[in-house]
Length: 444
Image (cartoon, rainbow, N blue to C red):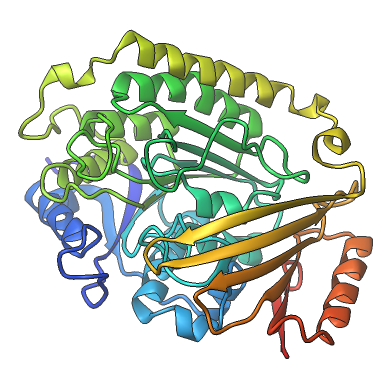
């Protein structure tokens, strides 16, 4: 009798044969090829309800509604990047159209370290596949779509967080190895989102050597309660797999079984591959476990060749540290409506801050000045001054009008754009209008 999946699952593979940082770089095509071989060996495509789909090619406009690429989108983005983003878009459309119950985009290059403004590649990422997918879906199916990201990569999902930091309709949860011990050195518990979306950013740093035990404590006691409360229309697992105990770049101890059970509990609508660099010892088993879990099938037999039950044992100190942070974040979430945002962010009508962004792949350093209007009618117009070095481009100005932008913020944004486009201080001035799906640019 032919095995039938409980949940209809779509798989999208794109190994990007013609894109590599270098032939021996950890982020290379073999990451996906070993997985594809394992999927075929396990006969997963013989299971009724598991089907493979081809990616589409994302358009430059899909990139532009998510990012501002400096000096231009054409100069920053390659065709493999567009196909990888298109794989994510295909996964999203399959789910939204009801063609499948869930979809897993096993694609590269990855994306979760790509910020709103892009000067080059960082953390192996140039553009943000999952954010491009979400922005495409919001334009096609309505901007009121409520989305929850659960990013399980060992590295903090700083790019996705940056894009949705002030977006009240997007919940972004990142569970990652403590940033004091791993790139990009961010993602701490007090980083909770902007004034228009306070507590919609949740960061849970995990101590090195956290096992399945600690991961699932966080899922059961923090992530699932918050998801139940938020009631998203879509749950997206940004499925980084470099938390695995054999990964060469991290110091975590998650197993393939741990990942599979995580996806059974999350029951994501969409999973999108992120990192994971143990190409032979982990990725084939982790990905097969995730596929089986998403399809509603038994994954209990999936184990790494060197699996030892002791790998799941965790020190009492690690458990205590995780519980402390889980309790703190859950209390923040539960009391989020009681927070005085004017007191927390500013008393002058605008939240202002500065940040430094390092592009480790491209060896670029960027300085940003950020300004967000505190608004009672929308999440507020955002203005960013950006300067990157080394670069032939002088400072640029970016103005972002959010979804459901109020008339006052829209007026301020366009006035700022018209005034600054006359200035010689900026090489380029950009205005990204989410409601009208428009990116304007003036070059001086």
